[in-house]
Length: 590
Image 1 (cartoon, rainbow, N blue to C red):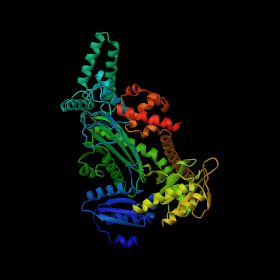
Image 2 (image 1 turned 180 degrees about the horizontal axis):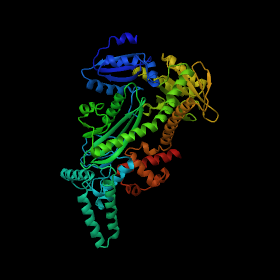
Image 3 (image 1 turned 180 degrees about the vertical axis):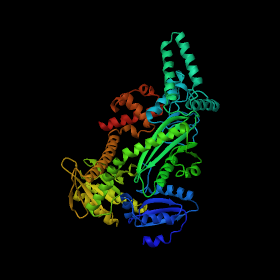
Image 4 (image 1 turned 135 degrees about the vertical axis):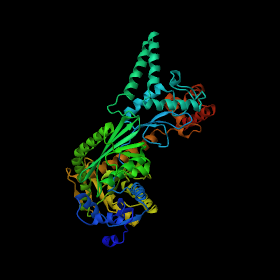
């Protein structure tokens, strides 16, 4: 079938999707010549990992585009939408902290990982949160922007020590904020002379006036500025923002080493090693495009693979260069050296990791006699003698937690103290009825926590919904540790505690239990701390916290006077409502 379809593929640019027997898109690629590229998958020999991927392909589809750039854009959109398991995904990558001057009427400085790329006043990345916060604390001392999340009615301590303009009581013009923004930008770009001279002058004046503590504070601030803005091992003199991206690969893996140069200085670095299929250049480009869809793009990128990354110039209007001499050339060589070292160190680890994850999935596939379950949904219930019943669903994709797909369910309260089977029935109906209504993709395997009764309940639910999803039960030992697996035919499989499959299933079961028990505790906590105050008109969350913090107990509140409540700045009408409600509650208790 595939060979017949290949004959019909045009020699045009486009995007293709490899699809498995379940209808899941497992790989997305782009090509300048679709026919040539697709033919390479199904002719000749490949390494083990590529052969493994090809063995899972049932058929393919393709979309013809006008240009290779259009195909590339479509490829990235499809990868983000479908998250194919054989594509390089940025979803689990670490995020970098930035410092941002917010775009508000009264702006403030914050450390953020959620980037607003339209904001011109975004500085970073910083190597870690500690470095970003140290810089932020320094900026707070130097520039009087507000520190509060919500403007208070009265000025706070920062106003009295000269670190806030107090827009809560003062009118601050846009021109003043524009000046501060410019000063902060200049400071972070390395123009520190004006502020250093000013601090030195203040330090000398404080010393002459015998204000030694204040003089020491100015001295500490001077040293902090020097540490933040001047001490760099790598320094280019042109104060330009650029990234260095070094790419090296072997027959199976790619290593990327990135240096983020901001204002001519090394701001942070990143390294990534991952396996690729068929084409190393396309895999590297795919990853980098995903990266720059999340993070700000500099004006210039230095790389040892200019031709492979050429599409970046069109997509992001960035200049690509491969310097041949000078400090930039030396810096790029340093990035290449680090990439080679990362590749050497990580290759063996990645092979072991692949065996641990995909190897365990293959073992589970053979044990249950089902296709390899790349998408697993696992359920667990939690309650306290039938009260506050909840259920959790955790999702593992490619043997790794996919936390954005986790779901938690507040369940109906059953009369029985246990209700485990009723709870399992309810959560599975709710989950998979919705899956049918919304026409979402089914998981490759469902795991339920419990023995034969929970498993039979789950099978009945799927039968009622006319679903044929493979299902199994995870049973714990007397010590509440993962013990064995029950398949759809009620056959039990003892799990060896040293096996990779045991480690995977134990991880899934523990994660489902953790997620369920945490949700149960949250609900129980809210239930315990629900009070008569929640029913009183005029008492919101802020007033409730204020009352409980001051009076500690409801009993103390009942004996409080009008003046006691008034001292907390509570309105007269609300005080009357509180006192009436508490008196009514006291009579009911009697």
